[in-house]
Image (cartoon, rainbow, N blue to C red):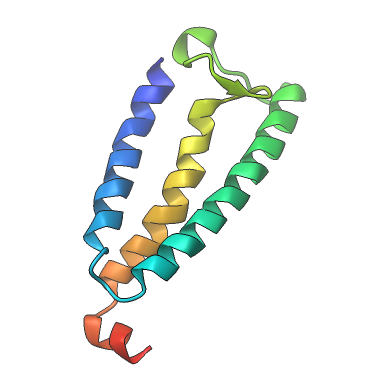
Length: 104
């Protein structure tokens, strides 16, 4: 279950940074956009990971994964696109000066 432990810091960091933007303008719209982006990225991850695993381009040692899979892909693989969909816009929001946000 090593891969699951590797994903925890990314997901915690994503949650902290995303919550830190809650008081910034456009939070609800950003969350909707991030949710749609996450959905698309998870679907694409499911498709391409399953194809790559089926073609034997890479494998996961059973003792390092949780055992929960979507097709052939371990559930741990889906944490990175989920984190990216929320973390990248949140970081951009935090790096944008408040004055520029209000004008947009």
